Structures are given as structure tokens and as C-alpha cells.
Length: 110
Image 1: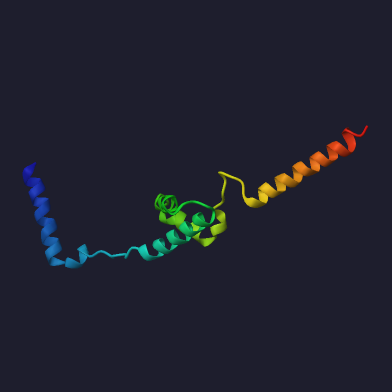
Image 2: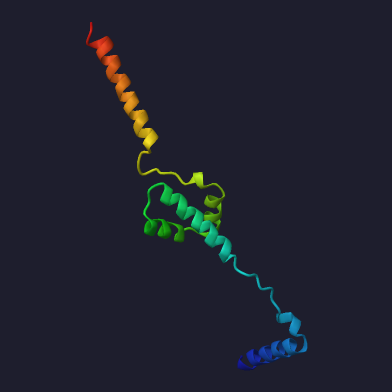
């Protein structure tokens, strides 16, 4: 069995020496610059939502390059789901005020 392995290795080495083009490979450069730019856009969107910079950087580092590209294409896809925005607080206040008005106007004046 050892002789078969050595013989196959010798044939492969001989074929690579005879035709070195068989071992050439395409080298695809990494797209690190694009991923860094996408990560910066995601981090800035997270910072605009009120996330501190260290947490924003950690969140962007946990995403894959395709996820970074997805969120960097349209930063509004990143939304604040852990809390209420200023507009939501205002709408809630208006709703509570309207309910109080309706209660006092119709229920308490019977």
C-alpha cells in the first residue's frame, strides 16, 4: 500500500513539473474596503438611534459581509425595536389626552 501512495505522489509531482499551469489558481482580492465602508454606515446608523459607539462597533462586527451590505444599502432597515422613539412618545401622549378628554366629556357628565 505504501508503494501505491508513493507512486501516485511521484506521478502528481511529475505532472506538476511538466505542466506548472495545472497548479495555477485565481486569486480573488478581499473586499475589505467595501465591508469597512458598510460597517461604518451601519455603526453611524446605530449611533443615530442612541447606541453607544462600542456597542455599535460590536454589533457591526457580528454581522456577515452580506448582512452589512444589506443594511448599508438602506440604513433605515435598522430600526429601534428596544424602545420608543420621540414621535411614538408624543403619539401616546396625544392618545392618552384624547381618551381623558372623551372620558371627562361623555362619561363623567352624565
